[in-house]
Length: 324
Image (cartoon, rainbow, N blue to C red; front, side):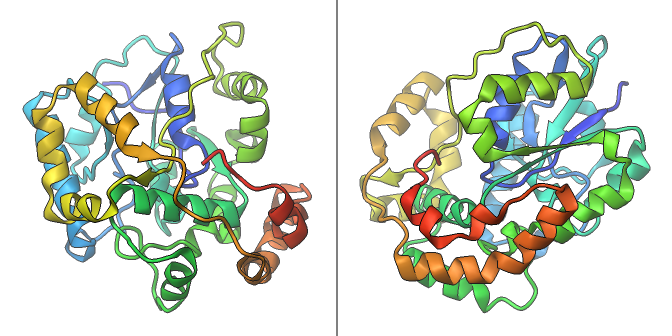
């Protein structure tokens, strides 16, 4: 059975879902039907996960197993080695075989685990302005009904966490502290095995970034991929209270399994809107820029790229990020 030879490791809300779908449409690329199997994040403790997240992960995996691996899932937690390899059982003749688990970037052990599994693996890292990244994650949590407070309250609650961990806390701030996360991969893999993409570049010129990525993976760069669609965008539910009830009760996976896919997609398109969530205030922008400034300086040096615009409050406020 062929093993994966590339990993799209994050960051969360930095365009990884769109990248997953674009790559998955290439005839030389095979991606696991579960976008995020999270196998190499062995520091995930299922018993410590937020109850609603654990319930949703368990329900999704049950549906996947019942289908004998024929349906596509966004996320699951697969700790079993043979079940994980089974995700790639049909990848025989593909040149690039991979998966995309965004827990691998903040995980303290995933980089070393991936290297032990395949030291020749290629690593794709997608980074985004950490302030916009945090705000987009917050909007996504509002969309799925897992949080109901305003952004400022969410950040202040997040900062109280002493030991952030994937799936246990929201990690709006921690997920955007990139230096140590990225350095773990540079310590584990040669630089020619690591490809870093900035979300801003990806949005501004997706075709160019896809061509660079295909070249990195060693597959045909002449094939033109459809990059107009954007996936996993945040939004605001039209009935927030009902949305939170459906999420916390665990009804969403059940409803998804009962409603035909095309109908479910139509309901989602109607139910979520881009309006209803206010943007960043000046005070919030200044606070977050100060919070991230040191880390942004460090990751700029690590990548040899000037990223200081990420922590310039005036540029944050004059270029409102709407492509979430």
